[in-house]
Image 1 (cartoon, rainbow over the protein chains, first blue to last red):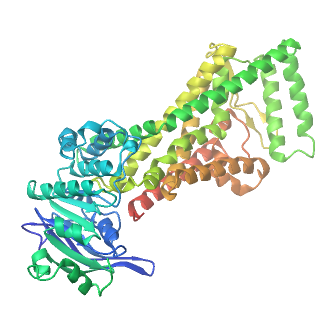
Image 2: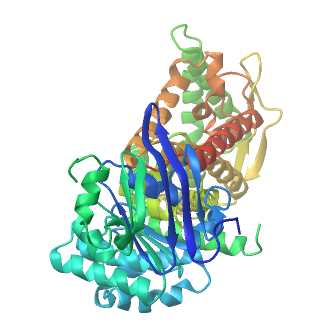
Image 3: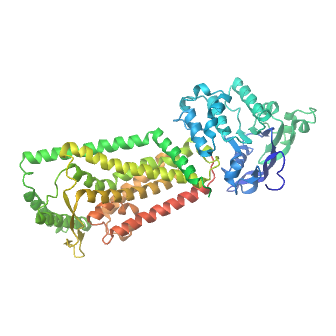
Amino acid sequence: MEPGTGGDVVLVAEGLAKRYGDREVVSDVSFRLRRGEVFGFLGPNGAGKTTTIRMLVGLVRPTRGRVLIEGFDVRRRFEDALRHVGCIVETPDLYRFLTGRENLEHFARMLGDGAEGRIDSLAALVRMEGRLDEPVGTYSLGMRQRIGIAQALLGDPTVLLLDEPANGLDPAGIREMRELIRHLAEERGLAVFVSSHLLSEVERTCDRVAIVHRGKTLAEGSLDELTGGGARSLEELFLERTGGETV
Amino acid sequence: MSASFPALLLRLVRNETLKVLKRRRFRVVLAVLAALLSLVVFAQARQQAAAQREGRGSDWRASAERRATQMERRAGSPRIPPAFARYLKYEAGRLRYHLEKGIDPNARTGPAFCLGFAGLGSVLFLPLLVAVVASDLVSSETSEGTMKLLLTRPVARWKVLLGKLVAMGLFTTLTVAASAALSWGLAGFAFGWRGWGAPVLTGFQLGSGGSLDVSAARAVPLWQDAIVSYGLAWYSALAVGCVTVLLSVVFRSAAAALGTMMATLVSGTILSRVAADWEAARWFFVTALPLPDYYAGLPTPVPGMSLAFCAAILAGWAAAATALAFVLFVRRDVTG
């Protein structure tokens, strides 16, 4: 366990930066994720949200900074760190030529330790038990999103990272997704990280928020703290912090 | 390394095998193999039937004698490229040695066809089939977006790639075994399935003076020669598989990886025909691919490439490609 990560903190991002050539896509992103909370990572498109998520899970190597998950550095102790994480990066891409069940079995085999035994209960949790034996190629986006979440939960993680989970879903699907996220945080004690460019969605779903703009985290806190106990709306705050640029 | 590593590797290989089979690429490989072999067997059977109608096939001695004389005459012509002249001299010498020993060099049986296909196939055909499966292994995960999931599971990247390489080895082995079994099985319908014990003359070498050196030639039972030949074909195919996996890591699309490999194989084959005396060609892995032919004694395109040298060239390329594939796969950022 590295210092400064005790107690409820499950994920620490410290001064993350990523440079591609001359272009710095992310320049200074820091935040902490705690057990049992839904954390909104809010910023306009192009703010560096996806690159940040890719750094959190070790897909992209940060130019500066580090990520600790349950005290393990993602770069140095990749397997120990990622054992505690489930994620969907951008779109829920699965093997389209395999069935939902075969996809889940595939990723369960990468985990070992009885993950295959959790498939049926997770399918029930995301309400996909009836369609599990159909090829993923025939699924709608919402169904793939749900199988993606079941996949992310296979390893019994403490951190769940979701990239724009509401994207492409219809209003009923968005509502269902919100309920599932709240359930996972409240009932199962997961720390759920949700990136979004939709203010309203973040306001409805999240306990705490970080605002990211042009590759920097501008503010981090509970919705109450940031909005001054409701004196300002999150939208006003966002516009103020980002200099009036629209989301 | 934890004690459960072999168990994990086994599970990873199972995943990769499942994906190859479900993508149906291997089925295509088997279908192409069966179709091509049927075509060749059919053509040879027709040829044989035609020769028998004309009464040519009845006396193999007379026809071998005629062909040997023809080849010697052509080999002496100044218009023949040197590599081809060497081949003609070799073939003529081989025929004469068979005449001397009283063994029909063109005896058509299922086992003989199977043996011949080890050499023929390892030049271009087996490498292409191996590349069909290997080119897909990494690039398809990149293009379909599943790489993001595969590499965010608590399994180090090098282990993921190792699982893919083992799967490549598995399907390469199956491809070579299937081509041996199918070539014998299909040719058997036309020429009979018996004849594994027939003697085969092998181990000729082209001497420095351009004449055939038969001092090392020996007669071995066909099955023995076939085992060695397919072993060597398998070795070549594995080297091709390793290079293809590197291309599959480099390219985002399986089509680009497969296309590059095909172009390399075809141009390498052309190169060894037209620019055979270019010394540098010996370092190119495609030139070294037909190991079974070189084992049988067929002259190498660049003089002085021994079987061991060719095997070492292939091992060197395979090792370098694999090392580079690991470095790129482990270090690179996964974007898009």
